[in-house]
Image 1 (cartoon, rainbow, N blue to C red):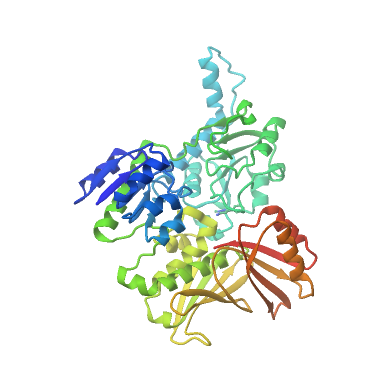
Image 2 (tube, rainbow, N blue to C red; image 1 turned 180 degrees about the vertical axis):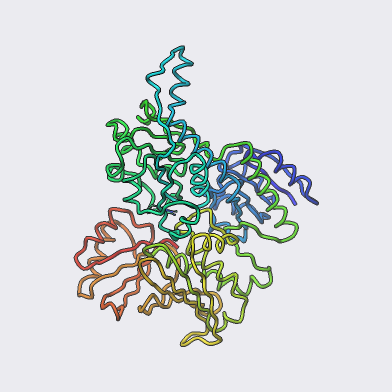
Length: 526
Ligand code: 9EZ
């Protein structure tokens, strides 16, 4: 087995690979895309961090490649669908650097409160400015945490150790789960009103991009201090600049930026702004953790066929995989589709398997459903191993049922999801041997291919609506590839499901929603 390590990997990880039976390991970092492409054909495994770009082009040339392992979490640099198409397993290490990132957040919080970076710079400039650097205590202050997954929870625990009062908002975690961790669950509005310090620990999603904007800041306490060591762009840098300049925001610490490095950002000139160059996950311990994890995972897969933390392959034995793959694909797509139509955090997911599919072990399909449901909200941390754990940690009840026959279909998978705000159901089937189809959405019968860029429109049943939608999309040069129209009987409205040739840009979506008969338009990425 030949393994290429193409980004800097802690030596401990390289050693694990070298010691594995029959492994030959090359470490070649800093290759250009062309150099990498010219040598990749000989390798069975590729180990990367964030620098190597695993593109379709590279994958085309990778004749023997079976696995790509990312030491760390983010997979922005890997074309996952292209890898899946060639049966290449993509793995990451979602747990190796949570503590490190939480600790960095606490470091930034205390540095901000005590102006340590500014005071260091002053003293190194031969000054002794005691008055200027008077700080603030954090004892008894309220910390507002947005997003309480793995990292946010550890931040909460550490902050409680420092005797802060911890309140948190996470739309996808049941309030009782936060209460059990000694965290007071609050709405986002209340968090803004009460927090002396605010820290963000969410992935970057369509809901969190620009979350901390001018409007959000205007709701916060005067002098609030803001920390972001999650993802760049969740804090709107222009709005933050204005808040810091006016004094509304007392101080801010960013580890991540809209563009990295942030170049000429005016934030860098402000006295009450401190920062680090995306160091959240950068400790010796975390780098060893992720290197060891990725090395062990690659060895386990290539020598023993055991898949851990894969983002594109469920854990199923190879011979069974052939037969159940269509159902695994269908399950994941149904979950991904439905997740993007939901409002409110999920409280219950019930999955019904009917017909032929009920004859298989359905556990992997349930895992696929959960991975599909969670990925749009939690992004790269979700994989085919931890999806059920992540669901349980969020207080989501999962119920499975099976019946041997399905009305009208040879096989049918139905998801019924309850959230704090709504209930929704979706059904899908496999046509022929391999073709996944969505056949029902609540009371709407349809036959849609769950793939690509889709748009779900709820509209009033009136003449001319479809025309106006087509015109609007056409004006923005968006081509409609497929279209389904139907009535949702109980709600008396119409539903249109479109597949478009590309992602619908914000302005086009705004225009669609403002059309007189359009009630709702949800873009869905499958
Ligand atoms: C937070 C969120 C969404 C959010 C998204 C995810 C954990 N988490 N939190 C505030 N995945 C909207 C507003």
